[in-house]
Amino acid sequence: MIETRRIVSSRKAAFRRPTTGPRILSVGAATPPRKYTQDDVLELFQEKDPKVRSLFTSSHINTRYLYLPDPVDGRMAEETNQELLDKHLNGALEIGPQAIEECLRPLGLAPYDIDFLCCVSTTGFLCPSLTAHLIKKMIFRENVRRVDILGMGCNAGVNGLQAVTAFAAANPGKVALLLCVEICSAAYVSNRSMVTGVVNSLFGDGAAAVAVRQDGGDSWQAGPLVVDFESHIIPDAIMAMRYTLEDTKLSFFLGRDIPYEIGANVEKPVNRLLGRHGLKRKDIEHWVVHSGGAKVIDAVEYNLGLTDHDVRHTIAVLKNYGNLSSGSILFSFRELCREGVVREGDLAVTIAMGPGTTIETALLVW
Amino acid sequence: MYAYETLRVVQDGAVVTAFLDRPDERNAINMRMVNDLSHLIDAVDDAKDVSALVLRGGTDVFTCGIDLHEFAAHEKRNIYGLQKWEHVCRELERLSKFTVAAVQGECTGGGFQLALSCDMRIAERRAVFCFDEVKLGFLPGMATFRLAKYIGFGRAKSIILTGRKVRAEEALSWGILDRVCDQVSFDETLMATVNELLPFHPVALEMARRLLDESYATSYENFLGHFLAAQYRAINSEAFDRLVAKAARQEHQERRADPARGRRTRAK
Image: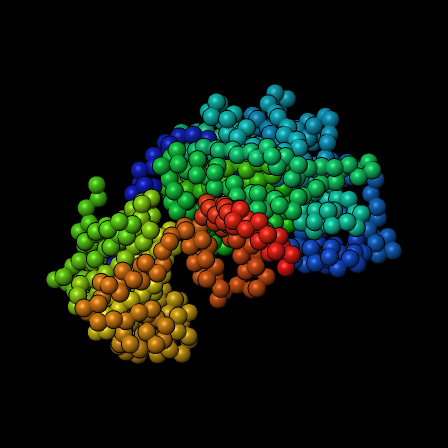
């Protein structure tokens, strides 16, 4: 059978791809040097409770990269709040620059060439903020513009992308850099409860960076245009994901209804985002979904009609790194780029969900 | 307005019927028909007033299969047309409405696959099904994926590798077909089949079909996660809202009619 045209619906053909706009030019990522299996972590926590153990073994996670202290007599040493804060900063200053370098290297750019720096992190509180520390460590220009996004959780990768995209659109030719760096192991509390068990079995450490620029000279091969964003917040579920205080330490709480709450709402922002461009879900070639956890991924799949194949990168990132919070969509995006299947005109939708409870989406086109 | 060239499409209430309509070519599936089917599926998917799509052919032939005239004779042939065809079968399989294949006469190759992609299949007693592709030197598409799920590995091997013809009665006994009837009662049987599927609850249909589709390929644990996500969606759908409201109304009425009743059932 002769079919020369691409497999596109008439609707998608009617979608007008912008000729210019901010593009994601490159992506880089980094993790701590040490990798742990779920069994390794259970061993370090010396966890005996079968309920907590089954959280680890049924998590659909094989390995995570973590900054964990060396064990004393086979058991992981207790960390003070100061140690956790130091771990966050030191970790961020180790893997953050590695992710930035991997992102900038293929572009032939150095930190000195960056005009806008946005750092996202929820796993440690600092003043001066991470951008200031990174500028000192990596030699950015003294007039680099910057913003730090704190406390927005797993969805913040998209919120950061909104910031760098807005800067790039307003300043054509200038380069904006987004760094998501989460040292989730700096927010671990080990008190043998199911609440901390859920968190400790799920989150991993990692950093990821993307460079965004609007330049009429860049073609689709340079990277996707960031076309649009759509947000959705569920104020009634504000307590579903939050920090609580355990003595002096911040401890993350994840409500059990989150996957269902996300599932019941995820259609709304996606339909609005696609609807205003005359698109439907089946017009989308690629889905870049936050690796929130196995149940959240199931809920997104079943409510958007996506297949395991559609979210293969999301599943792979969960399996190999755990939930990387704000950085995980960028890890999935990197997997997609490395796969080499993207073609001109392909559309992607990014979905990240987190505290608020919120669902953030973005539309990309190559 | 899109004009179908290879399909005759009619709507009767909530049921859209598309007749494969290339009578001079025994309804052979050419690229235009693939594109027409793609448009049809899109349109039916979007139509709020439609509950079911019926696919039919002529009275003597559903289709003789893929139109070989579509392939270039002296050039390197690419895969994209066949890829689009598989894409259309998948869209049909996942359409947000009930789908029924109603087969009369010959149903070969791609036609057989269209039928396997539908929710239900009925045929007239004279209908004959066959995958002749391997006998001819190519492949019966993703029917290689679908057929064994209907009839088991051994029977699927025999049908696909020998290209032998399967009569309607045999297809019925193997579970490929849901109903077989005579020509005189064909329309009536078709209508009964569609009515048996209704009422139409879009969320329940989408979820049930998808879970069934995955049932051969996933572990119990993964499947359970998928099921819970699907069931949560179903019990929060409009249809379930109505069901729960109706049950509450009924209980209220019964208690008004017989005040002791509510207490009795609760005491059980």
